[in-house]
Length: 89
Image (cartoon, rainbow, N blue to C red; front, side):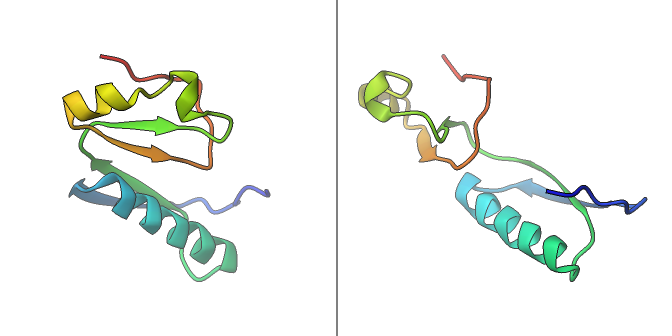
């Protein structure tokens, strides 16, 4: 992917927002930026605690335990990007 040479970035404060809603918004913004119909955009926000499982992750691998999700009430999402960080309690 080619990086933008744009010297400016639009910053948007979204406040507190659900993880999935912002994930969907981010996907829409990526498409719009690639089309040239939106400027580079930085989303600033907070979302409730959530476990994410990257592309190579498997729920059965123990990274996210069903019992922990039920006990804590935290949401979990499988995502299409990977991260080296892990969330634990």
